[in-house]
Length: 83
Image (cartoon, rainbow, N blue to C red):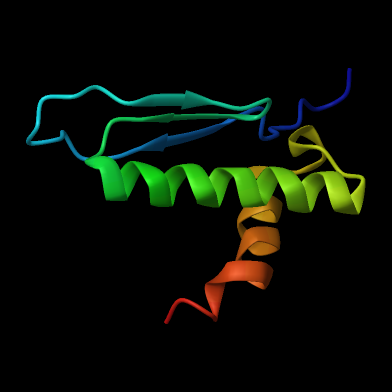
């Protein structure tokens, strides 16, 4: 029997509890983004939407990646530009 392989099935982006008491939730085809103040939620949502767009443009899906491969793939696009 073959070894099972871990893969990424969905992105979960969770922000800090918002001081305004609003519970924010945005869902995409491959992500769920919840909580955060308005600005933080917008940042998380934009990141997730950009990852979705990159996946679509490359013809890949989340399930093509192990967690480690996905981290490396995302860092190739975002890792160095945010330092």
